[in-house]
Image (tube, rainbow, N blue to C red; front, side, top):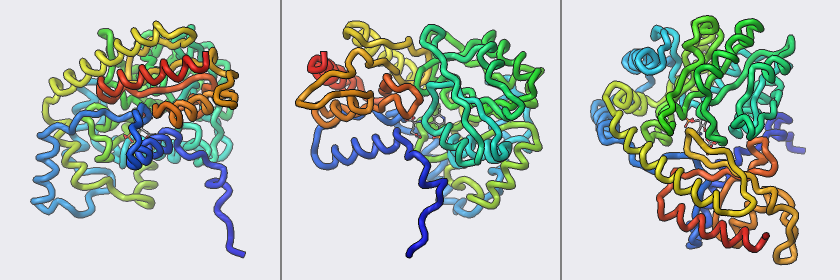
Length: 399
Ligand code: PMP
Ligand code: GLU
């Protein structure tokens, strides 16, 4: 008999965001007019100066292995960026460039977790965190947060969840899927618990630039009392519309970076040489105007969606302050029968909306929130208008 797959992989959930994005694309490929609000990726082109840098890199034959840790120019540009924008002090030896922030989160977990360590993850969470924690043989400890507190973990809640086995907290601000943004004083409150207990923080700041209502992103690693406990993660995917280029990075205490680098040296080696040149161009040039234009457009869509959703009976949501998702509660529309079938869960509801109304959304189950649904507004206004119309039509059948 042929030997089976590993138990680890057999038990692993497939990334629901990626799976649903692929499914919507496949239906579109079959000629079905599906509006897809699944993938969280900016719908703007990568800035020209970045593309030019990549093309130049190819012409210059910059197409070989690079240093495992990343090219020196990029490492330096990352340290300047972290200093300038995040008030974080690192030298280039404290940075590791990887194949996307997703890869950086995994590297960070691999570098610090032992079997049976606990990693605290506030829910709703990004789909990949718990699965990554399981992959490193640690245990995800899911902490439920509530709409009344904008889905944010409080110091008291964090304190209650910490045990002798707790290794780290994963903190994602602005948050995918809720759009929650932690304010400086909230992070300082968490920092007192973090300092006292010695736990680590994996701070995923990939959405730092996509932030609204005049709020400012604050990096928890810039709080001096816990600076050595924080692994800051970021990348170029969201800010520069570079999702396909696959460049992310982590910055942390040297020992952690060396551990993660050792791991990367055995598993993937360096991130793409051409993409590193592109990422360097993104960070070393002033692209603030391009980013501002993108954020204004996201904001316009956000306001449109909020207005529309406020007028749909029974939908609840927390006002998103960052990232480009709207997360909403569909409980009022569950346990209804339609076409001879009962819609029991948000999975059923998303399936119904996709197959009958050709609107693709991601059910909350993958984010640890059963009765909720996530849509991404990183798509055209025309698509959003179509989506709202389809959603209204679908929900009216369930009302
Ligand atoms: N963290 C969060 C919360 C995300 O939503 C994403 C987007 N996929 C990532 C990390 C990873 O981004 P990337 O690997 O494209 O840098
Ligand atoms: N961050 C995006 C999302 O949540 C991309 C998909 C993924 O990497 O899972 O939709």
